[in-house]
Image (cartoon, rainbow, N blue to C red; front, side, top):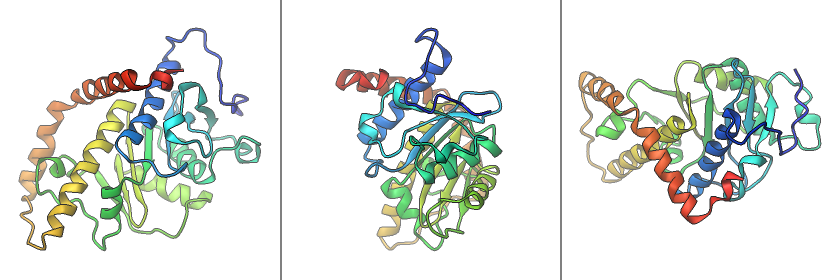
Length: 257
């Protein structure tokens, strides 16, 4: 089904609607990415599904700096609309390639955040980019991260999008070799928490590697237990995200517009 509202505004019965709340959260994620220095020029892209089948989704418009994204700016797209890239206000081609394919093929990936934060990207450049479990934060992701080591250039075609979607279908987090990171989750808050902790975990591992000393890697049993222990803190993602939004509100609440 084609969606006419590729324009950067949408109609809502009330601003308390579920879609508007999702728009606000996703807009906050863009602004927070700037606060944490995870943005990169006017590139990178975040999206969130609004339909039950995941195929209709919100995404940032082409080449708009993360620091200026507002809730009303987000484009409403349909992963099945093959004419999307032919329109004057078409999204970034790489964004459409990745997010269109993921929302088409992996309906449980409700929210998809893709960017190139410095430490996660540095990890992605290693011959073996495995996130070794050497502390609590690195062990948090034990068993959750897929490695995509088949980078072949910018993601800008259907085959590449399908390949990335297939890789994400097996893991909620995909470390993309020679590229960056993609995280998925049911909500913006949970996806942002993945991104937040993955970047911190990557920083710890990169700093440990920089010493030149041998890593003290946890056993598989200890890493698995630590990852499971983290599940008791799942609700912390929502508390963290709400407080981060409060910090944004105090600084510049225009993301809510």
